[in-house]
Image (tube, rainbow, N blue to C red):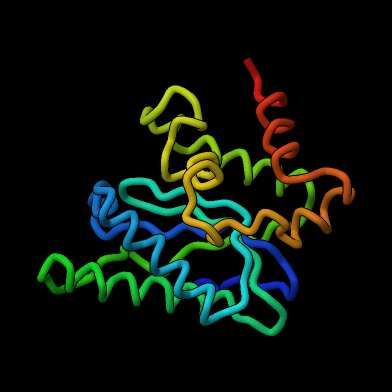
Length: 182
């Protein structure tokens, strides 16, 4: 029996989707770009903010906040199913792309927000893909530097609600880096 997904109106979520059989389906730039294009299409279809994200080789992390009266489940179902269809067409294959339904966790405090943001930011570092998070092309820094435009919401409402108005997202990233244990 499936565990009931915890949902909370107006909340931000840490969402993780893993590839079937832990395969590195997202290892090529072309497939990562396909996933990003799918996310951009979803943002035209649904109202939600992407606070940060990281596309790894066999999974993705998203910190997102659905808009008013939007369903996290509906957004993610659309993203993952449309990507799976396009992935299978791209490679001329059939079958499951994702391991299971996506995992999600409600972010309930500023401390949890910062910890989750940092966890997603440092995921490529922990995986041994880069020496510092800023070097990873498909993480927050890479998206801030190289786009695609409109993917990450730089003025995400979750940041504005959690932090004083004068603290911007770049300052938050620098604060997280400084708080990192040496």
